[in-house]
Structures are given as structure tokens and as C-alpha cells.
Length: 360
Ligand code: GDP
Image 1 (cartoon, helix red, strand yellow):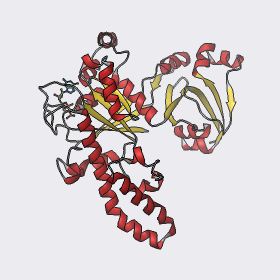
Image 2: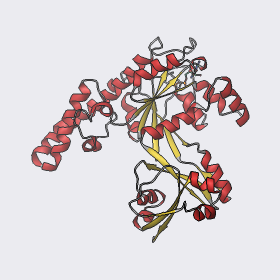
Image 3: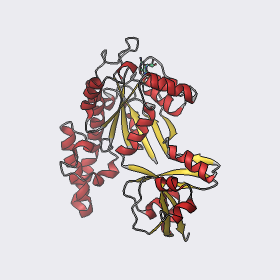
């Protein structure tokens, strides 16, 4: 499933955000290196369609699409040279499908900044540099071996050439995610090296609540990371929101001019960055959302439920969520001709409500 690794300099609000995300009570303290152990939290993608489906099918429970967040500690300036806890963060970051950098853009003078000043551009550069240096070390270590293998085995020539080109790109301070395609590097060749900068990046700017509606300020920050996506939130407000009853949370959001919690936005942007979508299943047992890549076929979607469903796929009975709700229920949707029987070549759409037929 979708795993997002959270990185950032010390004291930018990672733990605060992470607590809010997972309602875990991770230590959030006002000094560097407070976040000392990796933490994993699983959050559901908020999806109002599931409630309605559950009501329609009298489902016993609702299972949203899960998103895992890994709080990656120890990525600080000089980590690649052994500062802080050195490269200890590498193992945790490798499992993440995307990297989310939390960037401090709030001004509170009571919160110490590790570099003595609040500068989003510098902080982004620092983290980028550490990730690039980590990848360069990986490549420098592997390249002699890869080149030796390439001399002996034809099938190793691709990875050796790709690794060499990747090293040259990284040397220019460009991440593989940003520059590999333009440089003609096939990152799929590099998979076994577990490089960090091949992963998609997204950014959370932790801003003061008064700035959340300051469009000029937010545009400036957005420009620092474009074309990567930026989410803006006040991590402190987010951590207050989770302790409030629904109606009070809504009031607090309204008072700061926000239509929804920043966390919901982050999870959605994470899905978008990774090219993911969800389809839905519903019955008396559960109403559930399943995560698939955009462009997945019906058998691939079935395989997310169980690999046997993919192997034994026969057909899928599909109605779009909107059509189902407009008709009122399944028999009415069928009578209106909105329920389709789709075969193995069908490309899934977001919000398809599905029942698979399989011979497994
Ligand atoms: P981490 O080291 O990146 O995990 O940072 P923490 O989440 O531990 O936050 C460091 C300090 O900054 C704590 O005292 C937080 O309460 C404070 N902090 C976090 N987010 C915000 C924010 O949005 N505004 C303000 N004013 N303080 C914050």
C-alpha cells in the first residue's frame, strides 16, 4: 500500500504533524533530535462515499484506503558524513513510495531553528543535498562492481550505464526524480540500488495560521518546489483539530478560512503524486475502498483484493458511484442500464463500485 516517508530538519514540526496524522503520542519537544526512533502510522483516506455506500448496503463496517506514514528521523545537514545519527535514516526511507518534506515557514521565535534562521529555500536545499549525497555514495560504492559485471555479462550493461549516468546527474545537484527522464536514464534499471531521489517528492509547508490565506506568501513557497506539489498547513492547528469533536473542529477550520483539514489534503495529494486512485466494494460485511494505480485493468484491481481473484478473473460487474447514488440502489441502477459487465481489458475508473466474478 501507499507509504509516505516524512523528512525534514529538526524542529520544523514533523512530530507535531505525525501525531496529528496518527493520533499517536510521539514525543514533540522543542529541541533538535527529539524524534529519535522511526515511527509508522496508518491513516485512512477520508472518503465520504464510503458512508453513503455503507448506509445503502447496511454494511457492518467501513474500511477506507490506508496510507502509511513513516516518520524518518535523523536526516539532518551532514547526515551523509555521519552528523546526527548518520545514515541511519536510509533503511526507513527505502520503504517509502514517496518522500514528503516538512518545511518550516512559521516564525515562532520560541522554537529554535537548527541553522539559526527560518529559510524555507535553504532547508529544502539542505535536505535535497543530503538525499543526493546519500545516492551518490550508493552509486560510488556500487559502480566499480557493476562495471566489472558488465564486462562479463551482457545483461548487466544496462544497469552499469544507468548508474554511471545517474551519478553524473546527481553530481550536478539534480535529483533522479526531477532529471532522469530528461537525461535519458531508465530508473527501472536502477531498482536494485534502492536510490532515494528516484522517489516522487511532495512538500508540506508548516505555516502560521494567519498566513494560510495569504495567497502571495503561499505562491512564493509553491514556486520553490514546483512542479512538485505543495500542501500548506499549521501543524499546531492540525494537532488541535484531532482532539475536537467534529462540529468544533469544523468551527475552528472555518475560523481560519480552511475548507478541510490540511491532513486530508496531504493524503489526497499523496495519492495524486503517486498516480493512485480508489475503487469501491460494498456488502453487508463492509464498505471498502481499494488502492490501485491509475490505468489499472479490472483483473489488476481484483488482484489487490486477492491474487487468486486476478488469476481466476472472469468478469466484473461495475457501476460508477455517481450512477449508483443517482439511481438510489443496485436494482434501480440495473433497471436503468447503468450496471456494466466488464472483461479483462477494462480500465478501472475512480469510484467504480465493483463486484468481481472469479473462478478462484
Ligand atoms: P520535529 O523536530 O520536526 O519533529 O519538530 P516538532 O514537531 O517536535 O516541533 C518542534 C517545536 O515546534 C515544538 O515545540 C512544536 O510545538 C513547535 N511547532 C510545531 N509546529 C508548529 C507550528 O505550526 N507553529 C508553531 N508556532 N510552533 C510549532
